[in-house]
Picture 1 (cartoon, helix red, strand yellow):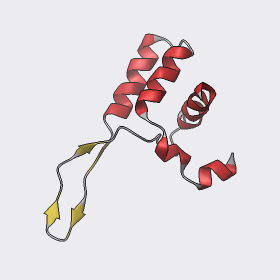
Picture 2 (cartoon, rainbow, N blue to C red; picture 1 turned 30 degrees about the vertical axis):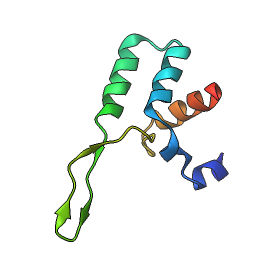
Picture 3 (cartoon, rainbow, N blue to C red; picture 1 turned 180 degrees about the vertical axis):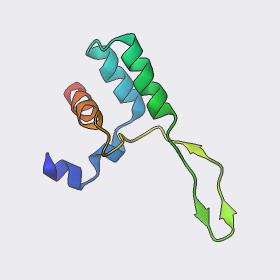
Picture 4 (cartoon, rainbow, N blue to C red; picture 1 turned 90 degrees about the horizontal axis):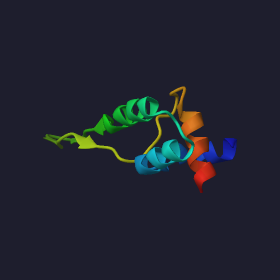
Length: 80
């Protein structure tokens, strides 16, 4: 597991797969919607010299350091 984290596997988990895993493992609807609202709010913006992009919605990546991240990552890997 440590080797997997070294290659930033958390950053390659699609949010759609997280949603499928939550449904597959019968998480309550309220938990599913809360977690998906959390992940749907991930946004990023880039600045290079004098140019700044608009906010981009991220659709991939599990938040490293978040308490639920390990569980979500394992659930998605179980689906694979």
